[in-house]
Image (cartoon, rainbow, N blue to C red):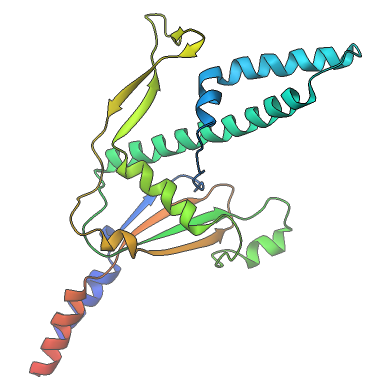
Length: 229
């Protein structure tokens, strides 16, 4: 009977229960309706407008301060949105390469974030694998990770034969691509009650660990075997 118990204990620690995504975690961004306008304009035109405003200022001309503020903020936000989309795309590609799907079973996700570059070498070493109690928000980290794997649609710019983005009435034309969610489905309580954690790692880049937790059946079987003895 002791062999059975040892078997289940080994099962808890096997590497096949851990899947590593070699990418620095990013938090999700709450998208608003006005973001669509930024996508339609695109980063190139926004930066052209920014340079135009800067030239006007250098010549001492009056500029629309409200427009200037909107353009500057729009460039920063669109850059964050595009990077987030790329982050989700990379996670999905990693999952496809590994044949990974979110299982219909208890699981945990650990987000490892690189220590701040401004910290001293000593402080970086001291915080290696230490739990993080600051931003980014845990729920937003998990939402971005989950969205990448559970995506059902993706909007991609339509391109011509030369690879240039197609526009109509100055707006980018998008195609909707159907995706298969990398999620086994079934009872979503495991997603809603996933065990989440975020830690520092003394490295330039972070990573994500998906851990398949021991099933409640593991404990039940061990308990039954012990009672039989």
